[in-house]
Length: 327
Ligand SMILES: Nc1ncnc2c1ncn2[C@@H]1O[C@H](COP(=O)(O)OP(=O)(O)OP(=O)(O)O)[C@@H](O)[C@H]1O
Image 1: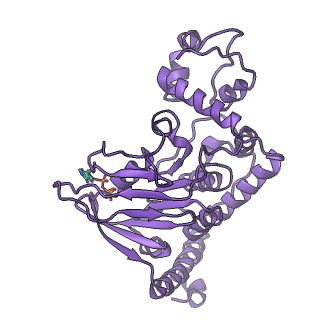
Image 2: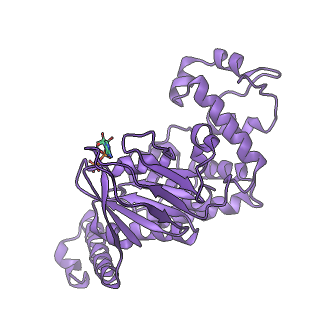
Image 3: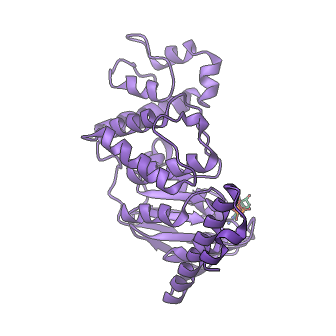
């Protein structure tokens, strides 16, 4: 594929990715040849990934609703454990489901998330198959634009773009062709600041955000601006983010959220827990009313811990706030 880069709407793509604007009538191959290695390396680009990203961008432009399908269900058909033993459970997720993935280190939690991310078709080590709305996904969603179905939030989210938070959000909102991109960007910023431990502003450069602030911004962006109906979260417990608020945001938007966690508060906050052992789903636990009561109690203790952390950061002695913490 070697498309002409003449479409004026592509300007936004290059601006958003910090790449130089193409000359008139230039084709992708020549544009690539003309890029300095720093420009290629900074964005981690290859010619193929740039071509794929351009295709996805154009497709999203032509489809303002964003997602190629209205997601009604996501199914995971059983695969096999690390030792080849068959997995026994098929799973079905619906919009608004928050599913927690628990299990010892190395048990296969990230493998399960990766299977969903690539919409596995029996071609990963677990041999699982993922169905979208009961059907095998269109190969295009897997190989050229599968990212349009799945947003991923991980521990290591660092921005390399030379933009401030407000401009970044506005560009994203504009690329979604929203009626009032500025208002949408403001809503995302407000939600992100609400979640992050430390406040930040529209004028803060992306590169100066702390790890927790970056993740709060990505969570709010994925929930409020991204059209992707499935969100995968790999261990946000240490992120300095209000975890319950983050989950509520996704549920309100009807996303399917799968999160791998070692944190009991998060694990009890989902509608279901998948227990992974030796690479396979060993048990599925539906959250009971009792689980919810424990989750509320843990949330109360967690708020106490947050207040104590803040007080100590401000230089106060624990005794000054302890009586009000509810421990
Ligand atoms: N069903 C499977 N068949 C074969 N290999 C598997 C299977 N499940 C997981 N693995 C492999 O086992 C290794 C550990 O899995 P993974 O990284 O998913 O564990 P994890 O539970 O996420 O660990 P951690 O809690 O440390 O992040 C990986 O190399 C993964 O590819």
